Each structure stands twice: as C-alpha cells, then as structure tokens.
Image 1 (cartoon, rainbow, N blue to C red):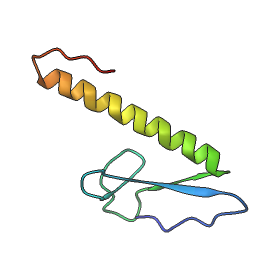
Image 2 (cartoon, rainbow, N blue to C red; image 1 turned 135 degrees about the horizontal axis):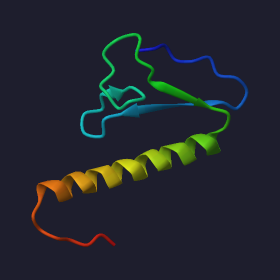
Image 3 (cartoon, rainbow, N blue to C red; image 1 turned 30 degrees about the vertical axis):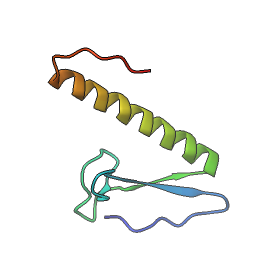
Length: 79
C-alpha cells in the first residue's frame, strides 16, 4: 500500500475501506495488498473530499441494489 501523501495547506486525503471488513481498498475498489496500489486520493479542501465521498457512497448503494435485484425474483420499491 502506498505511503500517506504529503499534504499542503488545506489538502485532505481520502482512503477507501471495505465496509464489512475494514480492509483498505485501492482506487479500483480491490483489496490493497501490494505497495504499488494507490489507496489515497488527495483533495484541495475538505468540501471537495466530502462531495467525492458522498458520490462514492451513492454509487456503491446503487451498485448494491442492482446486485440484489439481479439475484432476486421479487420486486421491491426503494423510497
């Protein structure tokens, strides 16, 4: 896994982890097991990092719901 980046001024770093295991993920959402995998994304400010994190969470929720739909023959509504 890459080393923690050198941050300047108001920069922040975002790290991804598997919600079930806590295992660190790389930028492609693969378990980080080698030193050449990039695991940090640097943003110029905290607001940019929060927007990105929210977008990642929203996308992962959509992906999970699609996966559930493909595995299920039942129909359900999401509010």
